[in-house]
Structures are given as structure tokens and as C-alpha cells.
Image (tube, rainbow, N blue to C red; front, top):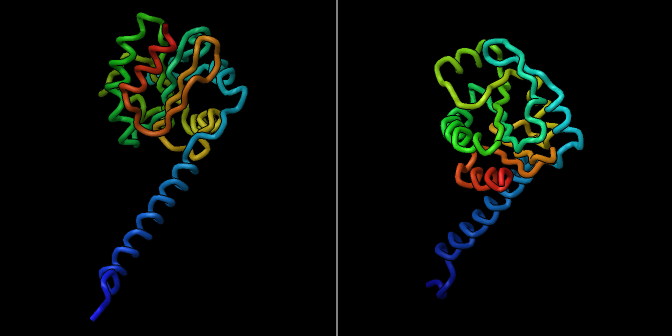
Length: 182
């Protein structure tokens, strides 16, 4: 007969506990790898110095956002969380644009795919086509993993206020954006 607290049941408990610790450690290490690194000092200046084509091929001078609070959303048509958050981003932009908030969606995708997507899924904020160059720009903002969606909030002063990797929590994003428009 086994003594109390020993035997197969105890082994399962210890094994389960070790598995939980290992899973937690793995999740933490994974998050650290995906967490945004420090942004390059010139990231905002580089962004605002660009003119990128909209889905119709017309150039959009991103310098027009200089001096305004700005939400920059890096996305792609093949990215389900990117597409899922776009209606919420559009509603947020429609609500806060009158208070001065700018927003731009930087498509890390082909011009044809973005044009097709935009025709079927209109949003209240401008979309631009950056192609794979959008990945390099996102890296300048600290997204070393190149994961999408990736959202950056820039203050009126041209400084990065917040960076969010993954699908946004729209309530949290709204609070951050409101703090920049105040």
C-alpha cells in the first residue's frame, strides 16, 4: 500500500505542475520575442517624409499628418486579425477625426490586393500601399518580428506615444487616442 501523498496521483500532480510552469515560461519567452523593441529615433520622421499610393494609385503625402495625433496601423489583406479590427478602427476614426485625430492604414501587401480589398471594405481613414517596404517601416517602429497587425500612436509632438502588437483592444486604443487629442 502506498503512503498518503505518494504514488501515481502525486506523480500526475507534480508532472502537471511542471508542465504548467514550462508552458508559462514558454509563453513569456515567446512574448518577449514578439514584444516591440525600442523604436528607431527617426521612425516618425521617416514615416512623415513618405508619399505612398492609395488603393487607386494616387499618392498620399503622409506629411499631412505632421503636428496631429496619429494612429498608424500596419496591416495586410491576408491577416485575419487585421481585417477583423478594421471596422472598429474605422468607427474610432470617424468619432475622433473631428477632434483632430489622424489615422492611416499602411498595407503590407500588393497594390492589387489592397485595391480589391478597399473596394469591398471601405473604411473612414486612408489606406496606403507600402508593399514589403511596410515591413521595414514597421521594424523602424520596433516591430522586429514583423507581426501584424501592428499599431503605433504618435503624439502631436511627433513622438511615439504607444505601440500595440496584435489585434487592438478598441476600448484601450480609444482611451490612448483620446489622451492624445485632449
